[in-house]
Length: 317
Length: 165
Image (cartoon, rainbow over all chains, first blue to last red; front, side, top):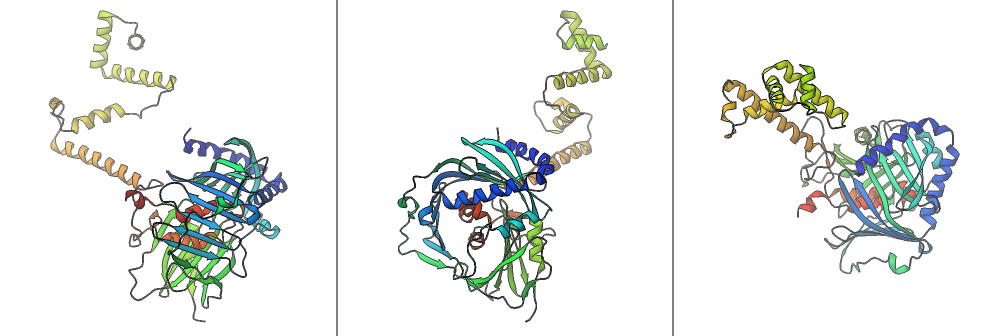
């Protein structure tokens, strides 16, 4: 069966389950915690396919829980890789000999679904259990997150009954169409050695681009209308590539995040390229505000991302 | 008449009887329509995909408008204006197809981002430079807690323009 047919079929139970959403919320939330715990506490290595539109890419992900280190390697095309440790993410780009470094900022850990955030989550989504289905040899439980409005996408998460590992994650739009999908085609739990999470690129002599992210207040910048369900989680300055400092505001509804980037327009800069672009569930919208370039990046429908961008304003402090 | 057409379809007529029935279908408009409807019913019953009403007619007129060397006899009777109209209709159909393909979920070619001058912003595939923004954004997405690094694949995803190289 083609992936599209499967996706279309997978969406059908979504409607029938909406009514059952209230019935077992506790169980569904327990499953979300289980998925989170498995993702964090288990060591595993597996191959997964990221599918968006008619495109798909295969990557390998390996996690060594004892070292809190995780490595992602793209298997198609250029061997790009990312290695995440407790407090940094390094992105290795062999074609340009660049390492990009993102560090955890002082006031913000990598997000977690803490009890408070789960409350936020259930304000914005109906969380329910879906069907049990076999995926890639794993007996999986579906957890359905149906959005309560059209400002966000819906999700179907399939978790391995035995380990709690997320085997498949499907993002669904308001019309019930699949926007993107992550699926493990092979997954092995345990038996991970430190060598398996080491970057394959020595990267000696490569240019290092450190984001230098630091909490900050972006004086004068705000949203004149916040989007329902999204709350500001962080405000910082950082570098992007070799650019001057860029402001970043991040909003989250408990599962989807939207970033607002604000950067001064350099006098010599090429004409601003404004408009909307997308990749799977990600939309990016760029517009000019008060001689700055405002770029909004979000795992949200185009209209939501545009609403964020249009709400950005500058008032002289 | 209907019994004869039905029998003809079922292969129950032979020789002269069959020839007469075919002749009827050829000459008589009602008979031809009955023949068409019976085939439609038969196709539906056998689960074959139905063609829309008037499909045969449209194919015939489309063929007539083509400057096909093999069927010069099909053209007489049609004025140049009619031919132009049909050709134009065909062109519009072709444009519609191209436009539809252009708005298919994943265009195969990278469209330029600079489409802001158009009245409604068109969604295009992310340009390569967008990777910096994706990487900067991804670390703050709660999805990472459920999925580990998997969503980061978007930050290094290849773009169509890179496939073309």
